Amino acid sequence: MKLNRAISFALVTVLTLTTAPALAKTPKPTLAQIEAAKKVEAAKKKAADAQAAKLAAANQTLRALTAKAKAAKALYVKAKNELAVASAAANAAARYALETAAAVNEAHRVIGRLASNAYIMGGSMTDIEPLLSANGPQDLMDQLSTLSTLGNKNTVALERFKAAEVVARAAKTAADEAKAAQQVATDKVTAAKKIADEAKAEQAIEVAKLQKVQDELMKALQNARKVRTTLQQQRELALLEESKANTAASTPGQKSIWPDRGFKGRSTIRTTQTQRDKAVAYARAQVLARKPYVWGAQGPKSFDCSGLVFAAYRAAGLSWPNWDRLNAALYSTYTKHVTLKELVPGDLLFYSYNGSISSIHHITIYAGNGMMWEANSKGRGLLYSNMYSIKGLMPFGGRV
Image (cartoon, rainbow, N blue to C red):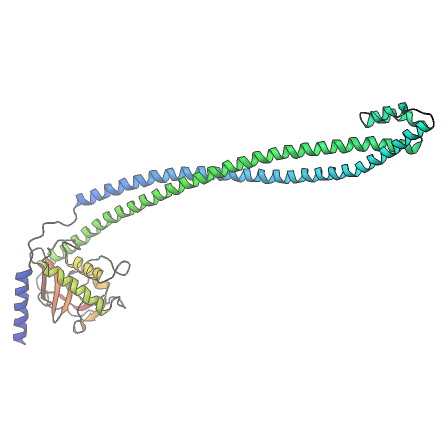
């Protein structure tokens, strides 16, 4: 047993000497960096707001054009209905004209017989000529007194002849005029509708362009906001862990392993052993590559303790919302608790300066055989070390 422990500590010493990086040169996100990110975000928001105003104006114009096109269509439909009515009237007048034409032909035959009788009986056409040249129904009626010698039947025939001809001609003329006028109106409405539709289509294209620009600007704004939020979150997490680590460094009487107080984490896990092995392999690669330790960093060039854990499992295939960037204390509540005897490679180890969840200041990735991969500190960098080499080990591991 003593021989195995001696070998383990010798291995730790060798790896520490061969893999310890130089002190980190890159600081945790500064207030200046966050302010710069805020300015970028504000500029993106200003551009997005301006574009949104343009888009709103274009949409207002589109609504007006839509209403105009709708009104034009309504007038067009109304004109078509009126045209149908006028056409029906014209058709009725035409049928009436055909009916009266038959009466006119009959009247012509009667008048022809009158003329023949007058000639045979020694009369003349002078009695009939005024009727044939009558200019209208009233003129016709004024001259019917000359027909007293022709008899009642002949008078009726002449009346029908002249009246039918006048009525039919007037009806056809009125119908033709109404139909022509209605066609002109229909042509105008059709042209107006075409113009309105073209304007609407053109405006819709413009709105689509504006919407595309707006979407791109909003995406840029969201990215800028994400950068700013990430920087702020990284800084706050780093400051919190830094504060806890500083407290731990000056806290006496810490136990090697704290007693189990019954703390509970998640009830389920999100990973397979294959994913846990990938996380271990990623952490190992960062240590062997001598990556530096930087407060608040989560790779790929530098890491802090929780940043290494976050990056390792992200590399193993976990992403938001199943996996997020937290600090060591929060990861202890974000994973399923297992006993130290149940640890498998990839489980997380937690270190506290008084045995409470809130005082957890360090987190590592269990490598197996009592060893772990960790981002230790500015002075020691990223290490392969024994899990008992740091005081304050919590009595459970966290399985992701």
